[in-house]
Length: 168
Image 1 (tube, one colour):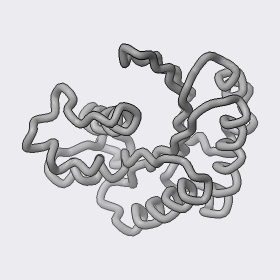
Image 2 (spheres, helix red, strand yellow):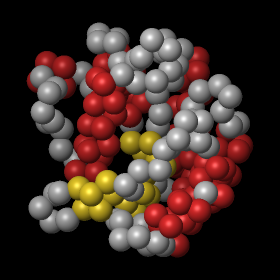
Image 3 (cartoon, rainbow, N blue to C red):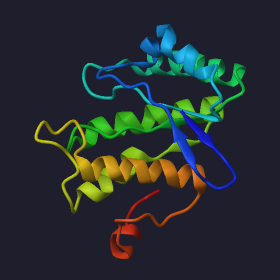
Image 4 (tube, rainbow, N blue to C red):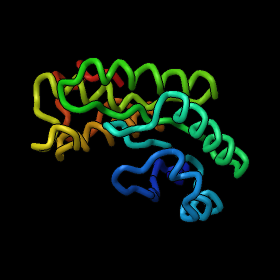
């Protein structure tokens, strides 16, 4: 969750634990507490690696979360996660689910997964488990979020030659 001001300063809050799904978010009291705070934007993401919820569960629970955030006056974004490293088939499933969720609920999508996959073609973005992001992957994810929120493309640490290849 994010709070923005006119000077483009960002206050960030985060509720993140491994393996958390949209269904878990719906029953987590800390999510409802956060939605009642003075944040402007909510970015939803759930676990995208096996075992992960089906498309039907993701669409149902994602819609409920989006409606809950809107009820509290928040702008909502959905973050498209990254796949297990080099899992092209799995990423096609992720693309389908998150694109559908965003379209059906008229919310912007943050293309973090696309950016990580693209950068990972040249620079390793994953830890040794091939599921979780390393520092570079986390940085690329953060840049994709900031790009979507601020519509700016240049961030410290990414060279122009790298930058033109990142699909924000």
